[in-house]
Every structure is written in C-alpha cells, then in structure tokens.
Image (cartoon, rainbow, N blue to C red):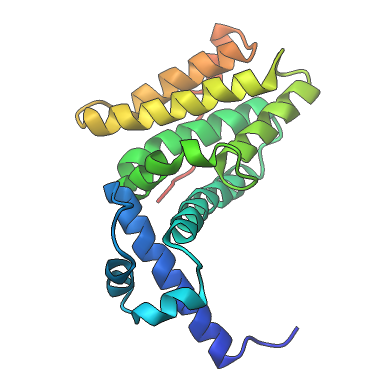
Length: 206
C-alpha cells in the first residue's frame, strides 16, 4: 500500500483534534457546547468541522467510541498472553477499575457515554462479552442468560467508576478487586478461586 498523502495526513490530524476536543467536553458532561467551541478547542476553523462530521452528535459518538476502543485495545494487549478466560476477564475488569483514578478525564468520558454505547460493536462491552463467552465455552463460567450477565457486568463497572469519583479517598484497587471477586462468583467460580485470581499481580497500566 502507498504511503498516505500530505492531504490525508492533515485530514487525519484534524479529525483526531476534533475527537480529542470532544472527549474533553464529554469528560465535563458538556454535550450542549456549540460546534464553534469544539473547533476552537481543537484549534481548527469551524468550516473544517463538516469535512469530517455531519452533526455534533456524530462527533460525540465517534469520540466516545474512540475512547472506549482505545482502552479496549490496551486491555487486549495486556491480556493477550493469558490462556484462562476467567483470568483474562478479571484482569480486564480490574485494570478498567483502576483507570478511573489513573485517567480521570477518560474515565468521565466513558461514564458519560457508557449507556448509549452498550450495544456498540467496538469498545469495552463486546470485549467483556467475548471473554465471558470464551469462559462458558471452556467450562470456566456458568451463564444462563448472557444478556442479563452483561447487564450485571456493565452496571457494576459504571457504578464503580461513579463511586470512585464521588469518594476520592476510597481505595480504588481494593474496591475494584472486591467487585471482581463478586463477578467471578456470579459467573460460577468458587470464592477461594475467585479471590486467588483477583490476587494475581496486574501489568503496569502506566
């Protein structure tokens, strides 16, 4: 394949700047901001906006999907060598829980859009569903209704993130790991095994 042209590179940089600016507004919970403020934050001309997005809503959805998928891709890399689906699921949940303190702006962007993207084909939720399906197929998990189980997992993560923002003094690692144990038990593991899996050292998110 040929290298991208200078025009294509400039266009990609402009789109990335718009997405990054939108993520900042998402983190603030401010989706009523006018397009002119978004383009000002991105340091581009207002007219350039429509070269990339038809509406402000389309930009905010793209920004949310990008944030979710970026974190999801990171989880894929950090769990790629794990053969046990239960361990991979627990690692992903525990790492995501720690994200709320390590990257508070990204965390708020995720929380402010999580429910609207619950059916997105990219991001965190399809990856969690994949890990659970692998756990069921391998006999590690027992799940009667995958959709209801995903409701439990997604609801737990969203509420955990909100709790950690509301209670900044709470130990995020302890809270996340305790909930991960509960989720593994919900998925059919014994309490001792769930606790052992959640005591496994995590890779460095930094």
